[in-house]
Length: 340
Image (cartoon, rainbow, N blue to C red; front, top):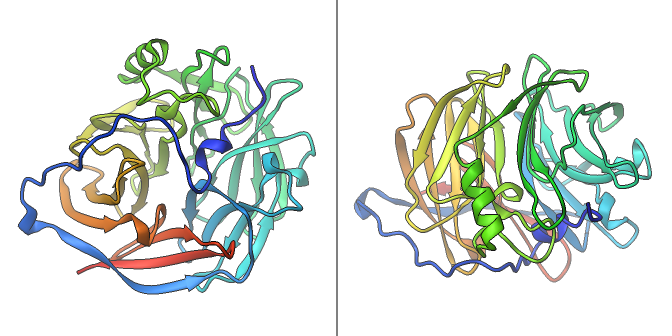
């Protein structure tokens, strides 16, 4: 397998091949609201590279992978910011091992950070654990040959769900597994979309494949959030958008389809039983956010968003949604928005 280059897909100014698609037509435009800025906060520190996806915790802190000239790009640190843009903590995979290549991360309900990492020489995958103060606590080796290019999450009971890839560099296929707290594989999941993704990758479909990074957009741009009910909610970058509710035993307990027209899934956050889902295409100026009940799948609200006000979806804390943007000064800007 080739050296990890997945982060090239996720930095600011992403440019990847994709089908050009118009924005979806609204079924009821009168019921839509537009997200408008209510507060804008700029970070004090600077960094040249920003890598998504992004996370937040219940205290309103925001977590972003950002690197500067002193950082190795493959080990870009996670920076924890207050809601006012002050950097509180900086975590690096080098705190655990200089050989690690960092991947996606997950923030638990108590503010602990779980970070997927890969050793190119041995091809072993680990989950690194940092406490809420940013101190490295432990590492857990996963008992499976999975390349952690997609999202991960940790259940309150300690089990981990990892959505990654397997296979050779030119034909990486989806892999989703449930691991216990010691890293032992408990169950491998077979999701309904897996075969579609495999077929699309083999056909070279540009909506799923790019020549940079790992080449699998459906998995790389997917996301997992932990629900209020203790289930993990997983979605891939597919049309239509399908969300799987998965319990700690690896059972799919619900499957929901969310209509986004021709816009692709681009991010998701959860708050008190509601999923806030961002939809957009890379070349479009407009984006769409839908609020979905995680139990019933009912769409309770639809918001329009100007992408220029924030391309990275960081947090959902009703009524506010937080987005990230960067400027030429290499500072990050958090824009807090509310429906109007």
